[in-house]
Length: 133
Length: 384
Image (cartoon, rainbow over all chains, first blue to last red; front, side, top):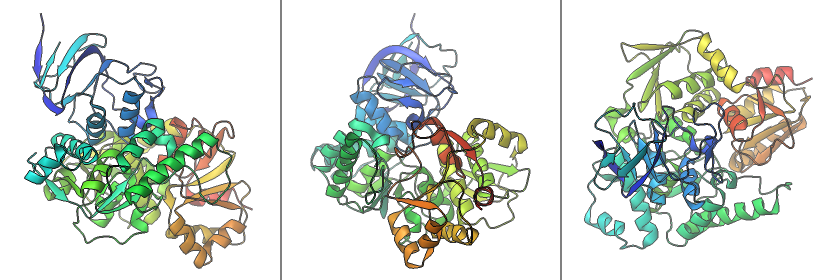
């Protein structure tokens, strides 16, 4: 059985992948290794986790304005998430980084997905503004 | 977000692919911040100049982008990786890639300011003017101290605004969102700029809204304190503005316990191999203060000062840099502390700085230990 959740499109497209979920915000510039696509901040709960081909589900980006380039570098280096879901309201760093990298990006989920665990396959259809679990 | 006929045509490629990509960025951030329209801006300040921050993907992106568009409003740019007028021991690759970035911005017609404190160098438009500032300290400072209105832009969104001359009319560009929904009250007297840095670092972490109020600050914080506070808020959060006073019923307390938690995180060394000042880059106010404090003294450790070239030149004219250099300091223009390639784990284990923002990036990105001390304590402890 699949669960459909309405959301809001920020950057269009659709993709499917394993969820990588965190309740912690991300400072992309300071916390992400753009060559390997891994979170390299020891204090982050996703420390050591790869972003390649996953659906990143996180609150929002914080800190450095250059984080937008970090997202773009992940894409160019072939290690970017296939889609990003913002649990909070979408932020400017992630929105602009996804816009230039053609990474589908959504926010404002109609129901909470706090039950969602990393590793679950999910689809993000930003154009239809829907997430399918 | 509603686009005008002209904007719609630009989005569809009527003015070329580069301008279309700029509009795709503006559309995405406009949707994210629920803007109804785009408005003209007076000034863009763009980040993503230092090769260490944007890498090869950024170099290639900017080369392509700059071949298709020129800036249409005054556009200043953030620091690069090194001082153009000084020898350095950086790799050939770093220097080559850095200069490709510099060239791209030159082609686009940006002002080669290489500064993270444009608000201390350039004429400030009249209060209420819409601008588009990436560089988090500059966005927070300009909203909070100068009364300009900008969202906390990203490197790419400010770049998009620089070539289109427009930004979404949303969040901190609208008067009603410039009212704080959360008030934070320090439970102890904030003495140094370091205390203000800790407060900002905490505020960035706990405040989700656009604007935060700080209650119980009775002094008029000076430039060094305001810069420290702005930079620290920008480091940890998405909040883009602060104001002083009590605005809300509910007040979040900021006590010694909170300060100690931040010190545990950022103060990772007892001492350092040398001193770094300048995150944000130092302005004339700090250089004046430093020259006074250093009267008749000499640093016992090497002290590296990051400073905009325009500030360095003005300070030289009034005799400040001479005094400071004689006391054992070395000026680095065009560059800054954050993700500097000039200080690496190969050279040093740890450094001393007064910047909470600097400490965060030195720890996280440069992987160097940091001993945090305030400005006056640094001069007191490390001079004779």
